[in-house]
Image (tube, rainbow, N blue to C red; front, side):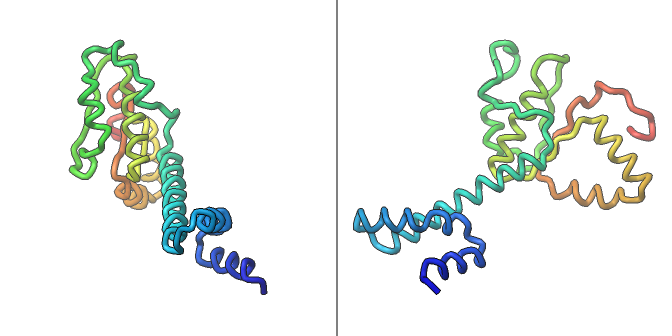
Length: 180
């Protein structure tokens, strides 16, 4: 078997798709610039890690179930002067997540609480935190349905795996006493 076919087979078996996709180009670049094999392997490993990180972020963003994607850069802080931009940017660093500190965004409808919540949670996904976004009424419905179907323990166990849970519209939608 030809060496490049054998190499591609090995890389496939090892689960290194980025190595497999880029090794020829990296090898040519390395030969052209007279770099050593360690440089070649290091560049391939960095590319593989970056690709895996991108895929992980995409999975976390999809698993979060955001209703829409909102970015901090798109939030108009001038519209809501009571919102501290430096404080929000500090929150975007995510130090509140490992510290398990709750963040409450309180105010009248239309101020951008949902936008900020989604943007901060999206930033957390990009920092490799598992996130789940819930509309409060949707969460209540999911919990009631899980209880009726005798799978509440499984739902709660799955929820414990998230590092950040966002509850949107908490207090805006009335719920039955049992649901509350």
